[in-house]
Length: 326
Image 1 (cartoon, rainbow, N blue to C red):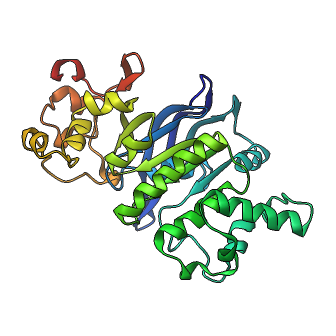
Image 2 (cartoon, rainbow, N blue to C red):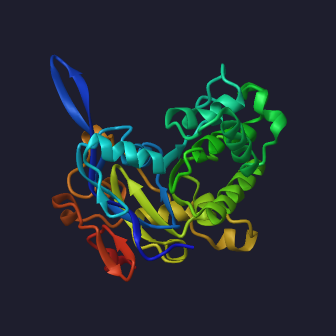
Image 3 (cartoon, rainbow, N blue to C red):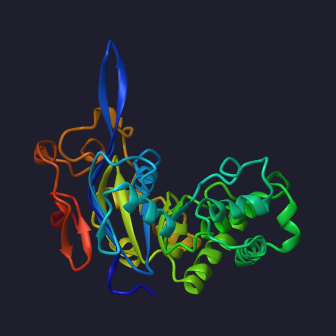
């Protein structure tokens, strides 16, 4: 269960990529634009939104796989500034990637894949210690010692993702960015992997940023949920609040599309269908990025970006008319 101190704080994070427009002109693609949030120790923050909204870029920028364009990342009360800070941080923070098929090297055995972070950070004193640690990591994720000498292509998708998770645990991390870790897996396997993340969190005291577009998966694992749209964060609250009383029009439409297992409630559930396409982040609309598809948009929405503010304790929303439409 989460403690009351923030392990990770992100303040005003921006990640722009320069896109070549031809004739020596370039234009910034605002993948992440002024995003702020905090994650408490032992907590899971779910980050949701449509494809292309910047969720994965947030995760990768936090780990400095991309150099942030602007903003601050604080870890355990310390601002990450120098190369040394980032190197230290990478021993405590790792990532589980989306695609278990492309994130594992086909020329390496499972033992080599899981042991690679141990080699990079020199986390063992003898060959025997290295082997024991690899087998321990494999046992955490439900793989046994016979699997160690096999290659990744000999495994199913769910088992490959387990190998990836074992690799991410090798440095004994405190914080893991889970980038859509179950979206490439069969639904029957998804539940097993999600439950494994839960068990590992309890056993090893982990903190997660869990990125996904499937809201049912996120609800199952998250303590709080943040919703992103076109590089901006539009809503943040604890999981039950987001599910039972979303305030932002975009969050409402996302939740209305979640399939419900009970036919009675499913029939009563009114789907909110959004019209129009997601604008390109290269030509984002002025003001609120959601206004071109929002049923409540007014002139004020085009004039200025609404402030991401706390409307109730722990419930943040970026909408000029959140109070009026709810």
